[in-house]
Image 1 (cartoon, rainbow, N blue to C red):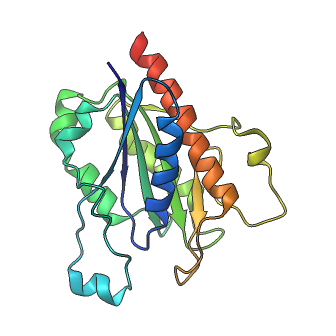
Image 2: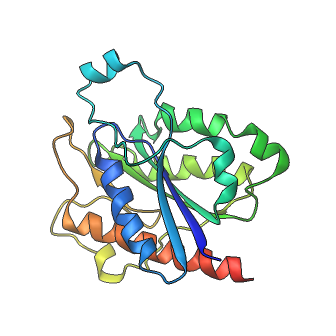
Length: 204
């Protein structure tokens, strides 16, 4: 049976959704892996989203329910940063997983994170670190990228999001910046690397 990887995200201006697509490419490149992209439910009214100039919802990415997480062999969670931690929409989704926590239905499953912030110093690493608390309570196994992307982790001649914790990008204060080639390459690598780990764990 295929190793099922779920890529679960929230995205306001489309940056995290773009990373999710690249992560899926990487995961799908691993033989025997089946990757699916999901988005978490929106919590803001349409009128508020319009004033924020939010990107159109990706209808090709279905909305996930908490219970569906248990179907996955591994999950990658993507979120924008809000004041140094995950967006409220993603936190609300985690808050809905109490039933899974009670049964420890996610315990032992590998999990990872990816993210977008407005600016450098906007909290990419703190978003990852605080997200780990959610995974820990579920007994999930945090799989960081580490330094496995090699020279791609060491680029210093351009602004680049992402870190040892996971893929990342900067949106710019007005959301106009788009993910760079280096950021997309790290996202694809994360998907491939994570899928390989999940496949190994499933075979045990």
